[in-house]
Figure 1 (cartoon, rainbow, N blue to C red):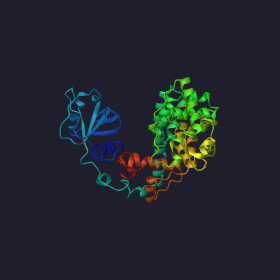
Figure 2 (figure 1 turned 90 degrees about the vertical axis):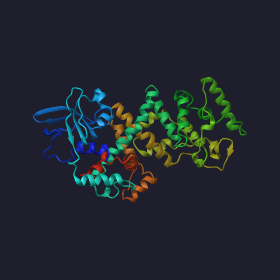
Figure 3 (figure 1 turned 90 degrees about the horizontal axis):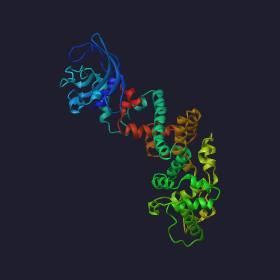
Figure 4 (figure 1 turned 120 degrees about the vertical axis):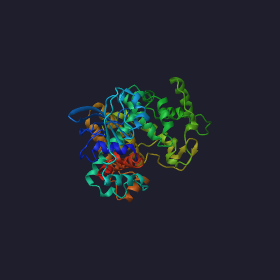
Length: 422
């Protein structure tokens, strides 16, 4: 048994309350279990209990054994001075305050309903794809749907932590932060880091001065990426390199090392050179990007904004100085949808929250509902269980449920697990 199970029992009062008393025989009434604390300090703050005829307000600490109080060093921590009740599975040792008074203790070992204990043990021992695989579809639809709504918001809030860090790094410059996040996600997982480093080393303010000149934007991005340091045979990359050297000196730029970019085992359409060419075209053909994103109201508008065709040179190239068959290099719809999920939606959500403008948060949710569900192994697993995501709103929530709750066996913090453990 894990201590988190006792947290669950106390938080939701899922134990027998008949003739409730402490291990010293004092009658006990729980008026409020307190606020669950997931950080350092006592497990529950601001609980209210009645011991005998006396009303107490304070904190509650929970352990499997009462001796864990000493094992964890709480006797030396002032944060635990206001603990009014020690809730344990078993009291194997009385715990004494510095004042010399014994801390009231509630023992739960004979108060756990057999059905709850059995289901909990089954979930803990389960080795199926998700612990509650045999229970999941038995829970009411409203429980599952409401939980997915909450998970989607939780996922967006976690994604916005990176946006908050970018805002701090850029002096709360929203356009610059959006530019860096967008650059990172242009690299997908494989080239996310060098793309982010590129954006951090080449301020948007520098690119903005040359936005009207596609050749100079491309020279700045490819040169700063470290991809113009070679000796080229073709005129176009040779000219790019020459232009970059001029701009590099003008703005005192230090380029990245070209070897950081990964081409191996990527489809040519995902080569970083192609993504850089697309990113260059987007910067060139768009007014300040974030300003436009704040105006979009539909997925079609996003797709139109990001459907940019790189310059003519790239029709016959996937890499600099390496000709290939003629082919359009505009971003595909699937790629634009990924950018929408990972960049536009969380940024709109965070912007709306920080500016206290609800319409941006609603727009973020609307975009997710307009996007098709992703296709991957996790969603295939849910489909096997009979859960089919109709759109990205649901698929994002299901991905979060599997990776953050099911895989970590956080059943006790899950609304579905909560419904099962009754």
